[in-house]
Image (cartoon, rainbow, N blue to C red; front, side):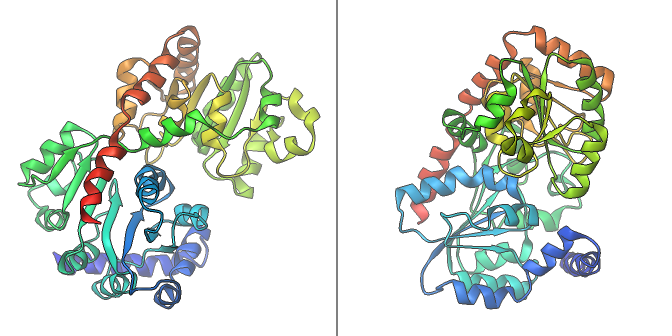
Length: 406
């Protein structure tokens, strides 16, 4: 099976090279890894030990961030290396101040893994939620560098738990300890003979709870909202936005804030065509008189998590694609949430539905019904905030364990 895995990595790299000719994300993926080892050698002193955090993308960064920051608080002299797989993580957080260096992760080949680990000289390696790379994990294991998975979550349908998943289960055996989000993940790992697992919960709860206590302030948005009830749609995609347009047309007494997942020019123009009266946040900052509108477009990255403080109800995008985005940021501010049908991979979404603080929808009609139901429910928001508060504590548990290895 290793030969098939290696072929898959080779084919992926080849595909990215071709795609980079016409796709901006693929181009960033390719460009960011060009001469990567020369860059690392110039920026990293490999005579010193480093703590290596790897994140697939921006969401995983926010998930692992509380652990990273607590380790840094405990000892500010610690050297931290961060890697990202996806441009959407690296390009947003490449200047993150608590890391000594931030890189794209080279593709998972034996040669790349051995060279990368030699250059950064890791003391421990921390992977958040998922991403299981055979050659990196094996090289770390061979060098006796402890590997940890934090905020992990496993499902029965994953290849690890299939009869043909022997190769993938071998990757799991290189992990020193798993910190997982739910009991199902504990049971699944133990069914493969792995006992090095703890039920810690999800570190994102700690992150969003702290953030909700002291969010950044945006006076222009506060002025736009005024005394009107505000519906905030975060991380939306075109299919989400088509449904939202119908809701907006039927709710003239509400104000709406849309923060799309992608803010490139093409997508902004699509939203302006769909909602001709939409106001861009960058224009609102320049011209305060635009507060008379009722739909605001957040046309930059990094504001959404704080914007939820101005809302009364929220919609989380992605549920008509690969899966919903972060529901906890909204829930932490006491907002009930609505999202599309693809949420089954997200434990918090299932929990919020069970508590009556979230509703999944699939059509414009269902969106309107969910809006009306949550509008009449005075407790849903409080339940959402209480759920987040009750789930905090994972960071402390994980950091106490990791300190034994540093």
